[in-house]
Amino acid sequence: MFKLLVIEDDKSLFHEIKERLTQWSYDVHGIKDFNQVMDEFSEIKPDLVIIDIQLPKYDGFHWCRMIRSHSNVPIIFLSSRDHPTDMVMSMQLGADDYIQKPFHFDVLIAKIQAILRRVYNYSTDQIQLKTWCGATIDYEKNTVSNESGTIELTKNETYILRELIEHKNNIVSREELINSLWEDERFISDNTLTVNVNRLRKRLDEIGLGQYIETKVGQGYIAKEGKTL
Image (cartoon, rainbow, N blue to C red):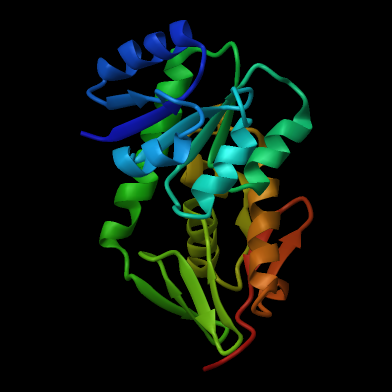
């Protein structure tokens, strides 16, 4: 049974989310004290976090930063705000998805299921270590290492990089990435993919590899093989 932490201060909404997700056999937990979110996160050790943006004391962006400083657990944002910068901010902070309120519970459940399948199942039949452009990629630990150092990626970033590397020197279309990453493109915006790829490239820049992920306008993305071990 997967353990989910819902960081939501609207009690009626939280209980509705909990009731719906419990029907799908998820173990759902809420926050008792919004001043002690990280303590409760560490105690619960969730497999996935659902977090609202507008919260008491500190907003969801703050808690996302705190969680990401300790864990790569998947994070889904919920928000009643419809400004595009909120979604961009959440993705830049390392969130895996963003759902605007009001939402249909079928959409929430579909996103949760897709993320859990991707994060906890996708690597079981894959080789865990891969070399690319002189770097070693550990799919299990979500790290990329070379002589310049080691960077840690989010689950989404690792998955995107894996898909591109498995088809290195060939263009992977945006549609292929969306379908592979989120399983159903109806449940994800095109802009979300752009944000994730840009964030991946920025992280790779830290160890000199960002230039090897190229955007092919109107086509997709390509991982070039530019270095040798």
